[in-house]
Image (cartoon, rainbow, N blue to C red; front, side, top):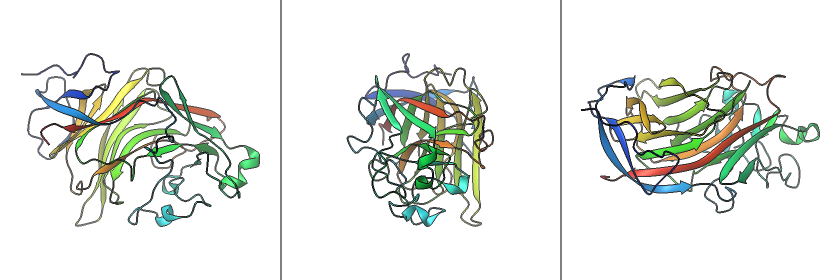
Length: 310
């Protein structure tokens, strides 16, 4: 028998205990959207991480404002020093921003005191803005300054439910995301809980990436979803990583699933960022004169749960 899709009536909350309704059937080798009539069963969860952003995200050292790097990342340049743009963007994607924080100096000899994070009334805003002309050479000629937060070396977890409640900004070159990587530094695996396609209003994509060991080929499977009022209203975007399947959720309703691919063995850490410009994600494109001068990515909270039976 199909059970109610929503785990709790008030999805604005991230209570210490949570129940989600998940598909009941065998997953097989499928990567599929979940249909309205699919039978569901409850999964009980307990909270292990929660940030509702009542204070600046760098105050309590729960987050790191740049990539930490890893030996097997596609670009070993993430190991670079603080006086560079290393760890501050993913050039492979064609990104045109640099991630900054108040102590980052770029090419300068002292910190530039650039803060892309604002906290007000329990809402974290990651702000991307066009680089000021007199700072451009100090910031490696990137078109925008923006922000990233990761929990690498701070919080990781294997299996469980990872959720962000946020608004999703848009525009030419705008690429907000909430995603996960393996703590061992490898890539893939990668779980993209939510990516905004910039120019495609009220549209988000949820994707799983993995590598075929025999060939080394990177595969992916994901789906786009239309979500009304993503720019003006907060919604929950989540993923439940079980032993056998990965299930994506919007407002705690299961929307797609995939059998856990090979390589999902290590605990994963979370990343939330606002990139500008992309050559890899359709619908984002490179920034141009029509791109907004200032972009605001509003995040109400980020929460993680472990499965009770684990």
